[in-house]
Image (cartoon, rainbow, N blue to C red):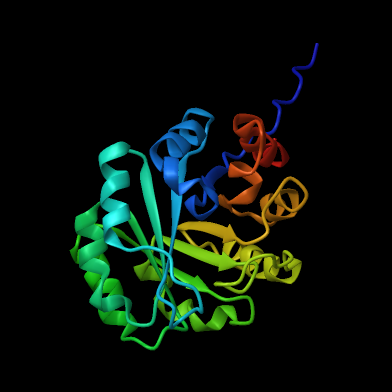
Length: 224
C-alpha cells in the first residue's frame, strides 16, 4: 500500500490588534482580552498631527502598556522626525519600532538608532509608494509594514492593489516579516494571507467584535 502524501504545512499568521480601536478608558482590560483571545502582539499607531493629520499618543501610553503586559509592542511611528523619538519609545518598552520611508528624516540614522536602542527596526510604505523606495534598506530592517489604506484617516476601504508589494517581497526572498495594515477584516484577510503577509493588523475587526477571540480566529482562518 502506498503511503499517502503528507498534508501541506499550515503557515502561521500573526494577528496584531490595533489599540486605537480599543476603549482607552479600560485599556488594560481591553488588551488582556484580545491577548487571552489569541492575539500575538499589539499594534500601536503613533500620530503626530504633522506627518498625518491626527494625534494619538506617545511614550507614556507605551510605558503603561509595558507595565500591563509582556506581549510584543509594535510601535508604528507616523511622525515627521522619528529619529528624535525612537529612544524614548524604546525606553518606554516598544519591542518593534517602524518608521515611514516617506518621513522627512535621515532614514539611515533612524534605523541605526532603533537598533542601538534595543528595538527591532521596521519600515513602512504608503499605498502609493513604490517598493523600490525601501529596497536599499531591506537588509537593515526586521519588518516591512505595507499600508493598505492611507495612514491617519479612518473609514477607508482596503486597497487590494498593494498586495503586489507583499507578493514581491516574498518572491524576492525578503527574510524579515511582512505586515499589512488598513481595512483588514474577515473579508480582506484571505487575500492578504494568500499574498504572503505574516502579520495582519486589525483594529475594529477585533476590538469592535462581540466575540474577540472568534474574530481573531476568523482572521487566521485563511491561513489554513
